[in-house]
Image 1 (tube, one colour):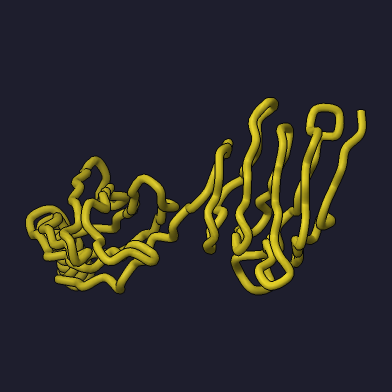
Image 2: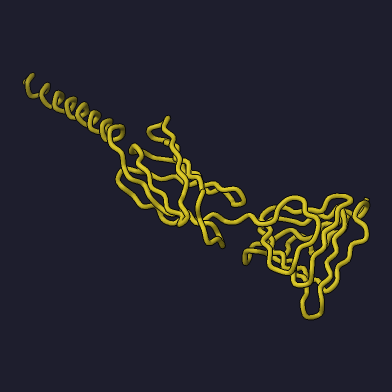
Amino acid sequence: FCSKTILPSAFVILAILFTGIFVSKNLNGQNVSVSGKALLEKQAKHDSVKIVFKSVVPGNYKDSIYTNTSGNYNLSLPQGIYDLTFTKQGFFNIKISKPFYANVVIADTTLEMIGLEGKLKGTLKAGTYKVGKNISIAINDSLVLQAGVKLLFREKTKFIIYGKLIAKGTLGDSIIFSNYDTAKYWKGLHFKDSVSLGNVLSYVMVENSDSGAINIYKT
């Protein structure tokens, strides 16, 4: 009677110990190959994207690698679950989490170009420009937009004018302020009236803003 009760328990304990040893060895003793491609939006070359791998399970392991000209990368990592961060100046960061318990090829990752951001001055020549973050003209600065300029704003971004904006389009070549992503709206033009003087808007179209097209603030 005693042997029938004790033996199953002993087998269970041995099974648990064996499983624990196997899992520990599997997680900490073997490496896997991780490869993939990180691409840069609207670029011919995709080099120098930095990819950081930080382990979540098990913790306390970190490694990084840079892409080559084609955007390819490959490295060996201990098995586990990782947080990955893709970064390059001028592009939005991307963060993803992935389990690596066998050799894996990660699906292509594309970093979105930020485009214009921050304080602007001088002249923008005819062409299409993406606005990835808020842009502004500082007090005493001026920005000239030539005919044919098209500014496409990312969602929730705005154009704040403290200085002077000269936007002179023509009948056949207007200046356009619009949204970058279909069905995702930007926040319009914002003129600070007490300091922003001498602005000129001619043959200009402002569209697809959910906060008013042209906003003038009086103080």
